[in-house]
Amino acid sequence: MVEEDTEIDCVLRPMNCEINLLSRSDGSTMFMQGDTTIVAGINGPMEVKSQKMAYDKLSIEVTYTPLTGPAKVDDRLIETYIRESCESAILVSLHPNTMICINLQEVQDSGGLLACAINASCLALINSGLSMKFTIAAVSCMIEKETGKIIMDPDNTQLKNAKAEFTYAFDSINKDIVCCHSVGRFSQSEFLASVDKCKQVSQFIFDFYREITKKYANTV
Amino acid sequence: MDLQYKTIHPVKYLQDHLEQGIRPDGRKFLSFRPVSVNVSSIVQADSSAIFKLGDTSAVCGIKAELATPKADIPDHGYIVPNVELSPLCSPKFRPGPPSEQAQVLSKLIDIVLSNSRALDLKDLCICKNKLVWVLYCDILCLNYNGSVIDACIGAMIAALKTLTLPEINYNSETGVIVTHPENRKAFTVRTLPVSASFAIFEKQLLLVDPSDDEEDMSSTRFSIVMDDEEEICYIHKPGGIPISQNLLCKGLEMTKVRAKSIRSVINAAISTLNVNNIETNSPK
Image (cartoon, rainbow over all chains, first blue to last red; front, top):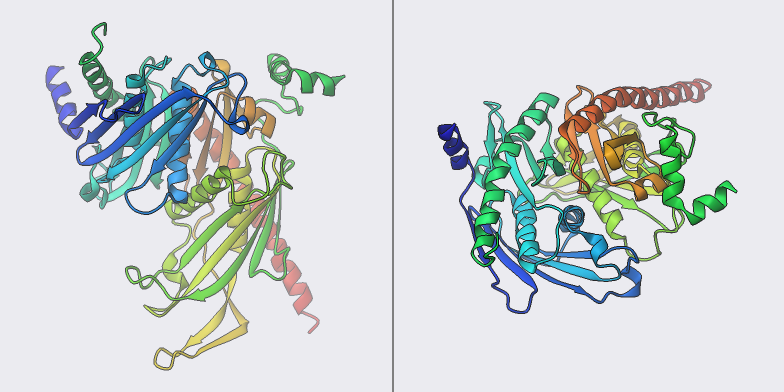
């Protein structure tokens, strides 16, 4: 069992994280997965314009800024994924009539950007101290074109031989699927196999969250 | 009485229905709405289709234009899907620049097209490095009542399937372009990706093909796109409550059946078009 664990551990790229690096945000983090790096900052709960106000829950605004140029249509999709995933994790009914802003800045993209962005925003949420139902961990994986092998957390060079690429986010309680995104064409069995493998690996990300949080929270 | 109840307690109204094992529009939990397709309804466009999914309806028009290709992919044409959600289709939308939801829909359709390999962009090349076709697929939602992505993808695929492009003679030395509008060649669509949407309620209750009210009050939604060979082209679940793998599997099985029936409806609509063409051409 121990051997198997270390084997899976090797397949995730090394994760690295710096917390509280932005002094004006309520929670911030710089999260690195291999070379893919995202800076996330959270502001709020704060006052909201009447247009976006929800009387029964906290509204969430996500702004994703790509490395170059203004935000494009592609980035709207990332924002939607992050907003809806975070909305499921936060106890939104605790803060009615307010909003939080999740701001993300891409620093470097070498594969698995969506997964990295979701993990960064989750870490920033933990850092901001908002009450959450569970934490979420996103894992990306790909299926290699020739061999049909599942490769966990691929980088850009590996992605060039990908038949399909998946990004899943899991919750920390039952490890059920919170969010799911796919690129490429694949069969049902390939899909199920990739979900299983990512589910196992997600535990390492949850452990990493715990390790990071322990540094500043002495009750964890 | 029913209407007042629905306006005052929308959530309870839905819950009461679901407890009785029925949905507000009278459907069972796992029954889809009827589909109807009409192709080549717009004469000015190069091809067009109207796709109706119960009340939800979307119309797609495709306009083909000539352009120079990008330098890094000199033998690929472009396809530009664009979804418009106007205030006409639902009070949720305001006039002005495309809403976030419209942008996300356009992007999703773009992803589905590139994932499914239904089109080979090399087919759109006329002269390498010089001239390619650009297909502008404008999708307009006429009535927004849930599962709009299914209607949009259906309308676009039906329109692409009936697309014909005029023959072009291009002289690469002089750069003269001669168009033969009467010699039109059909554009090959290799597979028909079909999308199915699902909504999940508390206690992991699965509803297929949700209406707008059901979508709004659901805990989470997901969509699955499948092609002819039952390969999955896209699984889209943006967030919401966590769901188990079994539920996704159930969705996959339902999509398989649904995709077959939608494909037959699209093919039937296209075959009636061919019959009409023969009838109109024969007197000449």
